Image (cartoon, rainbow over all chains, first blue to last red; front, side, top):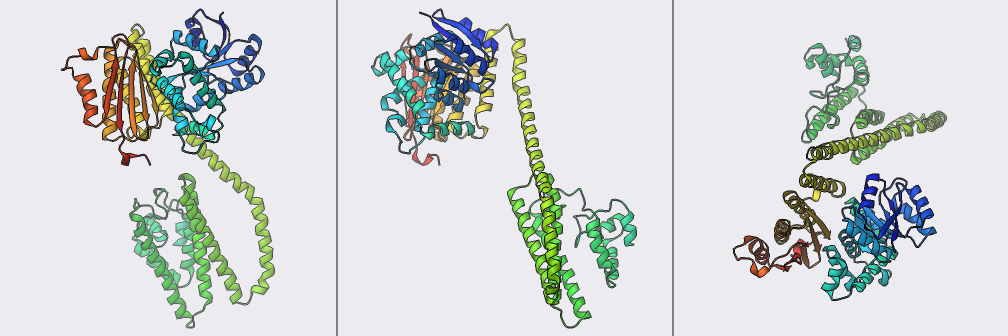
Length: 211
Length: 407
């Protein structure tokens, strides 16, 4: 079964580049270049997954997430951006994207990441993993909700290995756990990242931008 | 003499070499005479009172010398902060002498000292302060005013107004005319309030416009800076890329270098470039990238100042990056650094061909000396995980020295 994908990016050249690089398991059903057309295309085409750029005319990727997820909560988003700013990365994941990869990713890796996100798992780039580790370590304040506001030792280890450039398979081997368990840990980190309302998270991201 | 002066254009009150407010010095400079002559003439005329009146009028009508550097408040000329106190003292002395002269004069005229004189002095002092203010305000419009300057202006205004009020009411009270003047005063107050109400929106508008202009100026400066940066770096690189279009390796290298520098410019604070480990690591990675044409992704968690031991880690990491770039045969290298309260760690990883560590001859400087040896000398550890075909990861760890804690 192929995964139906909509590509949202304001650079037409980039959209066609991605289209050409994706493997056979992915079918690109539509493209959009700004927030309004993206929302309309997603509503009409009902894709499995949206490849979403962070910077878009009309409010950015976060606006697309906000407008689509209230109507179609089952659409999955994978953010794809050139931005290195923590505010962008954390912002779009907190907004509902299930992963974040940079545009330098190879076609094969991207296809892989798309399959993973379409499966309901999360995809973290090394940089996103680094940001998350940094954000959750940023404060000594006691957590409001320990279940959401703190990473477990194991989650930390997994994130660290992702940040070191390990693939899920390699992480599983390194920690003597199954790939499925690695995926569970990453999804759990994603959930914490999205649901924790510890405002240090957003504050941290903003501060990173400002320093 | 005074009237002729008025008609001549461009007589300025200079900031240099003035005694009281520069009127005499200005006239002298304009006529090409010695200032002493003019001063004596003014003093001579003052006996009848005409000199004083003319002098005061000229203080207002003659503009201060325009060439004064804007920063040195009332007496410009001598530049630098060190000159400020001396000019203040000199002027103070001059004012003091003038005041003393008046007092002596009044004592000569009326032997019984009139206390009302003090009130007049108060009033005059306040008026002087307020009038000087206008100068400072005009300058403040052109000079970016600091908070300090603004506060100073406020203090001066309040003191000036206070002194004038004391002078005026005191004078009236002294003459037992206060009750007579009360009606007039209340009428005046009402008029003043009315004028204030009318003028306030206009004044506020002026102030806002000034602020807006200043912001606009700052913004356009930023735009210019951005344009200059894009021109110097991005456009330049794009031209080079077009010229080297047939050499993919060169094009890739150019693009990577430009990407890195643009990212650094966009997302990093330039000031801490060399004081903490994270930016230093990014810079080292950039250098290796540039030299060897591989892509190195750096992820840092936390940051700490550079000290001898963390610098050793950075150097070892650089060596590891160079090795990965040269020998691994892959175009991608991952670098991960983490600063923990107790420890600083760097991991340099590639998915390249790897090697058999035991098979490396002992005389190969790179791994043994620059990485393992250096780390051990500084009390850290270097671990190398590699197998042929499995890629390589160099793990560097060192304990952090406590006194180098940030903050």
